[in-house]
Length: 101
Image (tube, rainbow, N blue to C red; front, side, top):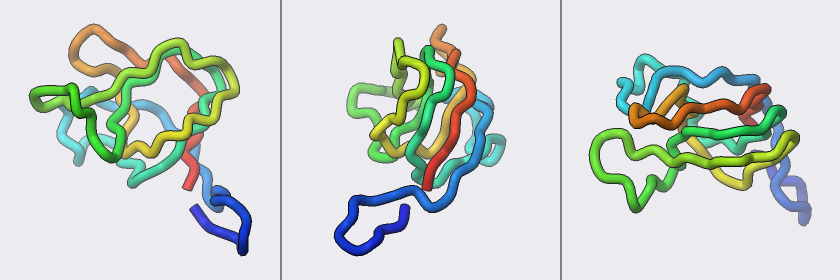
């Protein structure tokens, strides 16, 4: 994200995204977001990899699941991937997701 003078950070690029793969997918088979914030147009559940990791996940998936996200939400998290599922019964149901940089 870019910074303008004494103003807070603002996004200077946006990209509509579609969740791909699952938490056990090889990263080369996905669309890495390279540290993006997210806007969620249609709410629900989001399965993602937060940049700093998930301190409570053990194993290869290392995913974080956010539930009950309302429509039109800007999530103040930075993520590398948004997954279709976490390979453990949790699925991304959010839609109209925009990655912001």
